[in-house]
Image 1 (tube, one colour):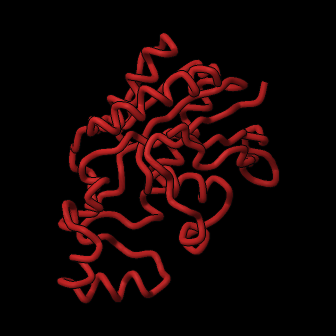
Image 2 (image 1 turned 120 degrees about the vertical axis):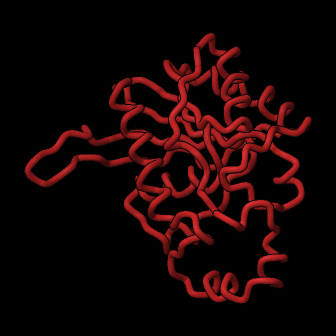
Length: 210
C-alpha cells in the first residue's frame, strides 16, 4: 500500500466566522464547527487511517477526537502542527490591520515572505509542519495517517512537500474548515546518491462535506 497522509483542517470557530486572525490563540469550535467535525469524521474513517496526530490547540484537538471516535483510534499530539504564530496580530481582522498598520499593507503587497508581527514566517511554519508530517509517515510506512491542524499551517506544508515555496503558496487556495487534503508519498524517504528521495503526489485538495 502507498504511504498516505490525510490532512484535515479543524472545524469553524467564532473567530473564523468573524474573519479574525487566530494564530496560536486557543479558540474553541463553534456549534457549526462541531457539526462539521461530526460530518467529516465518517469520511476520514472510510480512508482507514492507522493513526491520528493533532495540533494540541483545542479547535484541532476536538476535531481530531471526533474523528478518533469514528475510527476507534487514540489521538496523539504534536506541537509542530500548531497554526502560524501571528504575534500581536492575533485577534485582529485583515481590514483592521490594513487600516491601522501601514507596515502590514506593505508586507502583503511585497509578494515576498515576511514575519507576522513578532511571530513566524511562512517558511518557518512549513519547516516545522513538514517535519511533523515526515515523522508521522515514517512511523506508519505503507499505511494512511491522519493529521489534524490549521489552514495556514497545512497549506504551507502541502506547498513545501510538493517542492514549492512562497510564490506557490500565494497561488494555492486556502483550506476550508473541516476540509481534507490527501498526499501520497511516492519516494522512499530514504537518502540516496541524488539526495533525499522524498517525493509526494497531491491526490485531493480542500475537499469538504458541508
